[in-house]
Image (cartoon, rainbow, N blue to C red; front, side):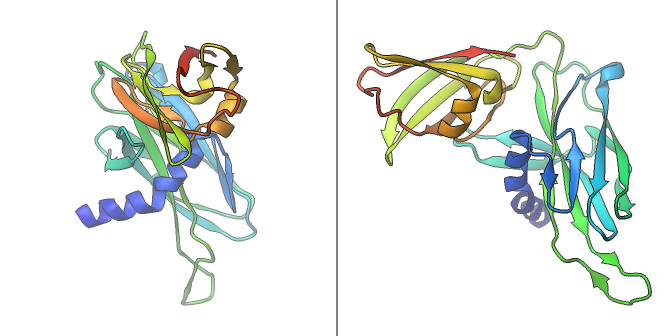
Length: 243
């Protein structure tokens, strides 16, 4: 089991970042939405994903429920979450040009104190070509959606704990003391050195900062490209949530 978990993590680590950035098309198939939210109870404890085969050949996919953990350095760990998420269907065969609805329902604890991040891992499997004994798989593409289960009235509270300089980059440690996750695409930053100040939009942040997701009640250190017009001696960063 440990060996299989490591294999899943290696295959899907890059893919989870793709999903968090909202990229919806990967090679021969796409999934929408790539980023979604659910509530722990009620009608919104369920969502529907749609996978579409854009290739000229059949596609076989397996959907894997995973819990997402991110440490302070941004390393991602995946834990099987079969007890928390129900996926229907678990596997599907898509003919060329066809699409398939995938239902995801939250089955975990209804009274969660903070938001929990999950991934639906899409794993491409070999398919048997009709009339041939061999299987065919030209390029296996494995990636994740990002699904956050969020309790009512949850809120992210962000503060910059530390700013340092390493390997020609700024290292910005951000603490989220709230009970809701945050994506940097939903923030704007005011960066100042006491003399000059800049307001960074989400588009600018995506170019300057690596990493996009901060889980609740956690800290994460992000690598940021230096802004040459600002001095680091008295550098200050204020983060504001935006829709």
